[in-house]
Amino acid sequence: MIRLSLGRKLFLIGNTILLTGLSIVCLLPLINILAISFSSAGPAIANMVKFWPVEFTFSSYKFIMHKQQFLTAMVVTLKRFSLGTIISLTLTLFSAYALSKEENAFRGRTIYAWVFMLTILFNGGLIPWYMAVNQTGLLDQIWALVIPNAVQVFNVILLLNFFRGLPKELEEAAFMDGAGHLTTLIRVFVPVSAPALATVALFTIVYHWNSWFDGLLLMNSPAHYPLQSYLQTVTTVRDLTLVSSQSLEDLKDVSDRTSKAAQLFLGALPILCAYPFLQRYFMKGIVMGSVKE
Image (cartoon, rainbow, N blue to C red; front, side, top):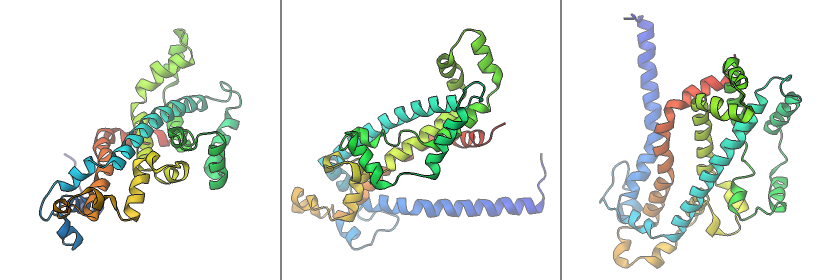
């Protein structure tokens, strides 16, 4: 048993109280949205709902399940984050493996590393970026949401530092057994890099799921909007489809505010469900990939 000093105990108690308070503050907006989504129209419009549903009902979720625009946007986002995660992880993995080599093993490695770093410090700007996407014929396609940001340099740096911290003997043993670089990467580096890869995957999934601005710029048709771009348009204008698609009897349970709250909660739900499974790798991957031995 380690005996803690009085100062240490006070620090731990204060730290626990502070972090618990911050966690509650972060959760309250989400709880409020969830409570509104399960409330009927009257209390929600009257601003009576705080952190518990008033006149509990599933009507808003039933309405959303029959809303074609929401379902279409959800499908686009599922395609985007599936393709984006696979492509981004693959390119990041190959880039990090190559840049993790020493100059004598990869001639010009330093030049390539600086080219990657310069993209963090400088960029061409929004208009040249849009023109480049347009000239390549990607506009209004799912690839416009995936390819332009397929390689995040921060993720490359995180993964290459992790690779450089691995024992050299692993790679040397693979080469002695006749393995090439591709076999070494897939059969040696990837299995031992689960924490770093999970961290990169989490960053990539969150980016693709939450990104909305590029969808508004690169998609000409609202039918091609990803979920977050669609939600941005829904939250800034009044949803007139509610009146046209609902009967007077249903309008007492579903309002513009409750339907928006339900859509916002469903938009955040997949990330809330995925994060607990990747969280145990998150801190380990960040720490191990942020320093080089």
